Image (cartoon, rainbow, N blue to C red; front, side):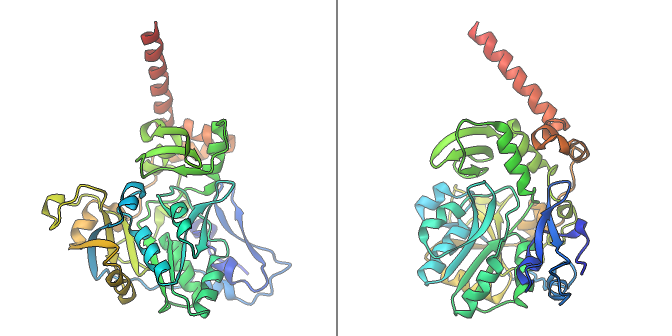
Amino acid sequence: MKLCDIEKCTGCGACVNICPKKAIAMAETDTGKTVWSIDETQCVECGMCEKTCPVLNSSDFYEPVKTLAAWTLNEHDKKTCASGGIATALYRLILEENGVIYGCEYDDDLKPVISRSESIKDIEAFKSSKYVQSSTEDSFQQVKKDLADNRKVLYVGTPCQIDGLIHFLGGSQDNLVTVDIICHGAPPFKYLQDYVKALKVKKKPTSVTFRGKYDYCFGLFDGEERILLNKAADDYYLKAFLNGTSFRDNCYQCRYAGKDRVSDLTIGDFWGLDKKSLNQKYEGKISLILVNTTNGQKLIDRAQDYLYTEERSLEEARKHNEQLNHPMAAHEDRDAFLKNYRQGVYRALKSTNGGKEITKNRLKGRVKTLIKRK
């Protein structure tokens, strides 16, 4: 068997989940991204993986039927969520309805994984933007079982992960609501793991933050204890993410980066929103919701006690959010990063022009500090 071209593989894991012989696993390429790998000794050539791969098969895309500016009504979530707290509010609703939720959390090795939960306690781990690709693990199989048990399911992931889930299930399902995030691109999780190791912090971190309380800062935490905090302009990893240096190859040709979506709902920051024109004045973080299907609209209708929503235009949403128009372009630093990747992620990031600028600024800062001390 042969699946999609490695360069086009999104790493969604649909093939891994569908294989009846467990002959497929995710393996790392020489640039650290995870792609399909088939054990030919176990493969029986049933063709299930080929029929399931989103890259090899057509997908259903929906033009949004409604565009909303929105934020959570929960005061705690307003303070702790990366944006307007939409996913968190929907998690709370589904759990109240005795449903099951799927979201991204870090495991013990700082690998971001899509996990299943029926507990409100797990929502905290699902919060905040994670600027790294997560692994779907066996979550597609778990969703299938939940649906067979007639459970309501909310699944939040990147558009390619959602499309992989839908192809795995053979189409959209009434009891399943899919939510995709407006994705700028995803660095392989190996990059984050290797970068954190290279920092050699004194305590083992249990989580990494990029947004939320410390907005646009690279933060390492051991539980609630802060271990390290770098502003975006002073952090090699975060700066490379924001300028588009470190994504998977396929992200730069992403077919999901447009106004037409594969999920029931799409969420992200409402960049460029004219707050002065809102019917209800609000100075906090505001999210964008694209309602793409009837199934998505039904969930938003049920969430009125959890969210404030106000209709806006799709044109306003697209104007300042380029991933609703086209994929992010590869930064000029990408070639230098890949050229030096074998030396380790940390050194490769430092070798770029952006990395050299950070190093230069750090040295200037140290000199200024020494002068002040003298």
